[in-house]
Length: 346
Image 1 (cartoon, rainbow, N blue to C red):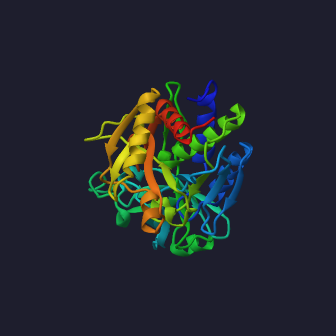
Image 2 (cartoon, helix red, strand yellow):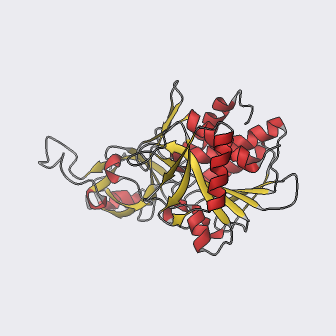
Image 3 (cartoon, rainbow, N blue to C red):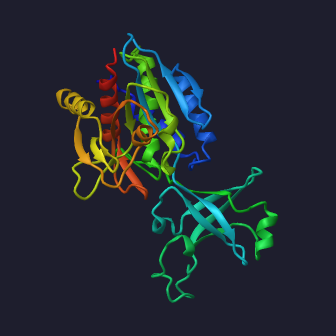
């Protein structure tokens, strides 16, 4: 496994750099620029696809298989659906956030002409002293709205600010790293895993390590809306590094790397999954093997798009996915170690 004396600081700093940049699907240009900067700091060549995916080229020590790694840097978010007569913003989901967890969250509104406003996501029955159903009204798209931090009284006032339907609403990730090693934030799915890959590239440079085979590390930007992996480069094996699930009927914890045997799209490649399990077990990497019934990944999308590649999925255990998520350095480190073993670094 990697020599990781300074790994925790590097990993958490990398995660912060990604997590503090708003990047819901379709609005990812700034986080891709940051990931590209991090990859180049690690000495890697990069390129971008027409759809906006970032591809990082990592030369191998020998010819043979073409290896692909992928993680996604797009996140969940919201978009303005309409403006009410009294100046509130009705919203529509980008991806699948758990909407009740957004009640009371601070947010930013990005206009198409580059202006940024702040606001708060609230129930349309927001006051206990006013509304009989303040505590019981469902928190769903038709009953949540954004209160803008500007003096607006009617729809025309909002329109005068340059805000309109189709503008992105990005809620605060509230990223926190605790002394006990926890990373708490929205969007650890999947910026936590993207940080693992970018930190690994940096450690590889510092320690003079390279993979056995030529590897393309792909950071996709439409995973949360279902087509991130549709235009990945052709490879022989594709390993998605996404979040591991923690919860009912699962064995993974936040302190482990999860190896997914099957998700909602079906089983992953038997030989790849078996190899990952063997690598983890034989090298002392703390791991779990689980089934994810409510999950899909860029591997499934790549397969549906026609990629002829073996595929598998791993990632650090993440609690409360699509809500206020949490993982631990131990799980992220275990993920980095397993990726390094899979790449046969030397």
